[in-house]
Image (cartoon, rainbow, N blue to C red; front, side, top):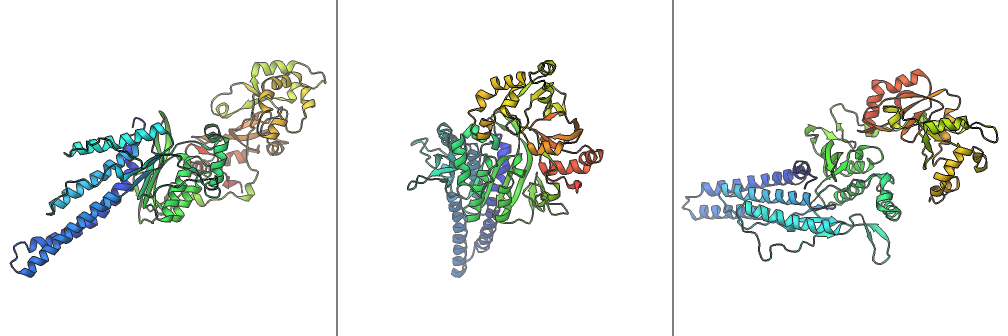
Amino acid sequence: AHYTDPVSIMRIVNPVIVEPLMAEWGGIKSHISAHMDTVHALDKATKAADKSKATNALKDANRLYYTWLERLEKFRILDPACGSGNFLYLGLQALKDIEHRAGLEAEELGLERNLIPHTGPHNVLGIELDEYAAELARVTVWIGEIQWMKRHGYEPSRNPILKTLNQIECRDALLSVEEKTAETVAAQWPQADCIIGNPPFLGDKKMRAELGDVYTEALRSAYTGRVPGGADLVCYWFNNASDALKTGNVSRAGLVATNSIRQKRNRPVLERITKVGAIFDAWSDEEWVNEGAAVRVSIVCFAPDSFATARLDGKPVGGINADLTASGGGGVDLTQAHPLKENAGASFFGLCLAGNFDIKGDLARAWLKQPNAHGVSNTEVLRPLYNGKDVQHRYTDRWVIDFGVTRGEAEAAQFEKPFGHIAENVRPIRVGNKRKARAANWWRHGEARPGLRKALEGLSRFITTVETTKHRIFVFLPIRVAPEHNLIVIPREDDATFGILQSRVHTFWALRIGGTPAVLACALILFV
């Protein structure tokens, strides 16, 4: 509760639970009102037929009311990554408020209000991997039940005060093991009327470090063809929720994701949703607190039905695209944009060192003055190294030892000082690398980018930009500079190309296609 404020959670609870149920109750209430109008009109009737008609109208009104209470009693809310139960807590509070309001309004129409609540902890379902968090969620739900009952004048259950909540399960929400075959497969979720929650934020590049190689490979294998291999962890929850929509098990769902859900590597899960249903309410880029750290998130609510209107960032729109932009009204759906084949090879990632190849400038300049036995200067293998910080702020005077893509170990060893540094600082780590090429060629960069090097041949300078940045800027760097992997390199040296890239048209395109923070657009549309 400390990390997730109620206002943010209600941005999911309201459109997924409150609004559709209140709309449903509104229809039922109008029918009850019509029956009660008949009752009131015949209240003082003397004819037996009229009295019978009034009695039947009252029975019909009561049947509608109690059928509605049974509907609420059977309503199930699932949070498949429930943590300590914050979403379930507010979801249950909302459901009980709906029941209470229906009782008051039924009483206003002339019915006798039911005083025994039909909603309670049985309405919520959860899945949580951490045992302590799962138990805390159970207690949280019961505390919420007791708080609500006391606020509204009901006597909470005391025999016992807290009962078992086995429907909040302690297990993996994504993977399970088949008993017969011992095969790891996608986990099944319990059937529910709606799905809400805030699944864990874990980027593709951190999954192996956090979850381990075995689990990561098993996860990607189990979801092959459903979730892209390079997608963030949260995408697996979106996939399972969309599966539930497709099968008709769920009427609405709302989940939180980092705002990178809109970007190309993650967006296929949202595209699946728009094919089987529609995104009807979303917040494209909002502040959020996750484990005490501020992040930017997207809040996405979706359903199996299409909607005449939707809400995006709190405003009505004609519809919502998979990149969480508005559709209709003359807007362009950029999710339909595809890379142009004419731009193949128009840009490259910088060097991925995969080891301690970088050295301080003072040391590099000292080595440049020192001779080697074979008479070749160290200028052949020492280059200034730039990363995103160097481009956007100030050069930090880092250099890199670069033995290229073809230089063998024996030839590299002739550059005594640089090779000695690599042998001491890189070799002990790289020889055990799981990638055979990195282990065998430990004196070379992990990704030496032969395609980039070939594209840069004959140039005196090149254009570069930071891969992930809030403000899209381009700069020229001298050909001698080594660009690190968080830089995107455009192997062109002419001013015209630079002007096109830095133009307002292209920077707007790059920001829209890449998200916020933005990445360089895959297709440089003005090159063709």
